[in-house]
Image (tube, rainbow, N blue to C red; front, side, top):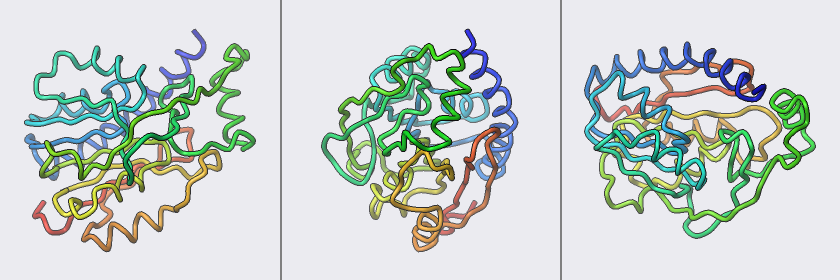
Length: 236
């Protein structure tokens, strides 16, 4: 009960940010989106939020966690133009280790520093009474590159929420990044996730591929920001 209450409070605070994100995209796409790709779709929160505000022709969702994948199917079964993949995306193909956290939005491929202050503090607030004896479960998941998914051609919005794996997803587009109009992603600045890159690395990579940062907002109670980069080759 306590865990659900904390998640509810955080989600309510996140609503303000989501409204600002939607407002930004409305200024670029008005009411019509051709293709939305959701990497780290979780339970379909982003998909449902966008469908409340836009007409979307094609939606592709990627979720590596089997449990989240099943919930995603249940919560989006009313959506006809949606294709769901039980698959992780990155810069490689094959099988990778996936750390499944009891707070499902924190599950990740990225290595986690179990001794970090942020990890300990996060578990303290989410599991105040110490009910969750096992915080993480390691499982094997399939991973592929986005440029290998044949169905997807041009992308209006590429949303990435992969808990510290965002740059790997971006690199996995290869030259197909030139067909993406906008990239909307989270970046974490805390010490819990062991990444081999910084935001500056992502920024320089996107600038090199003709993108420009157009939106930035901090997420409440977290050392995390959301960014939107726009491909300058498209008139938006």
